[in-house]
Length: 220
Image (cartoon, rainbow, N blue to C red):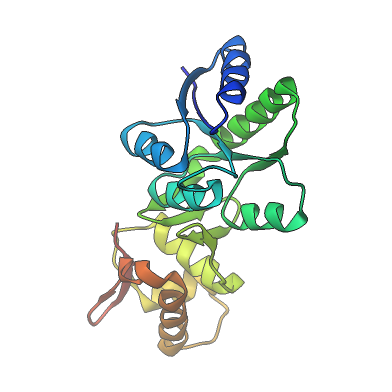
């Protein structure tokens, strides 16, 4: 059963969304503010979260940031404001869609379906460890909800290591696989890219472990 968490401080909005969600075959849970939403997400698994921005105690943006650190669950933001800044900021946090109030419940459910379908298609190709989320097919990396500023080659290197995680990889193999056989380089090329990659992964840099006398491995 698909589970949807509805987070809004307005009870009537929660009721309308809940009614239409049930009509579409979704099981629902509710929260009236950001803190309650965090508790729900911590204790339960949801397939999608519908999250209002303007709420007391903890706003939707702050709640979304914390949620994305805990679990890679799709989030649809609701807002009475139409400013482009809000939308861009939401997408930077990893929001999957943005709906402006007042909205059509039918349209909202259609957007939920699109987000769920997209999430399920890519589910097996998204690797998550702590607050590090690596979308393998989309070639994107987020650190605590923010997109990591990686070069294309750093992405290539990280994806290869993640897909061969917990395996010690020699510098020679990394040069051959990531830079291809016709690349004329040396071990310092790998070391330099590893150094930059660790820097860009911030608090999750320690997942890239040095294997003394050999190379590196991504440990998870």
